[in-house]
Image 1 (cartoon, rainbow, N blue to C red):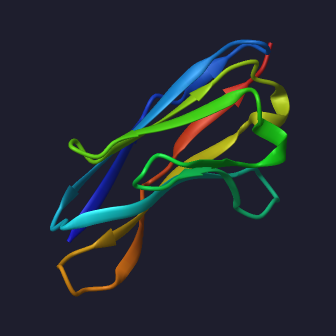
Image 2 (image 1 turned 135 degrees about the horizontal axis):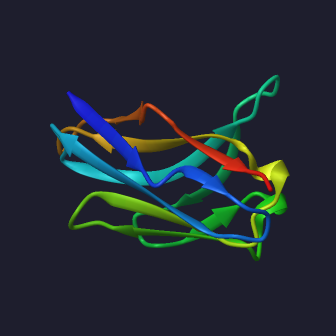
Length: 121
């Protein structure tokens, strides 16, 4: 099995910063894309940012210039640095990883349990 464990959520004032981290463990041969999604109350889960194994990032328009995604392939971790936070960023943030469990195995997506980010004065 594969487990993703997130950390770093919390309460922050508008304009503040938070850093989310996610560590993958278990039966892992390699991880292709890693990413962060979020889901606000009453809304669908949406992609925030993703990064390929080679380090190429992709961001939602709403977070470009404010959020930075990074990963450490040796440690199977992915981070999300969030700056200039606004109340609209309030949501549960989920880590996602496309994991291959063998040389000739396909990738399967796994999710973390989610971490709450609340931006409020």
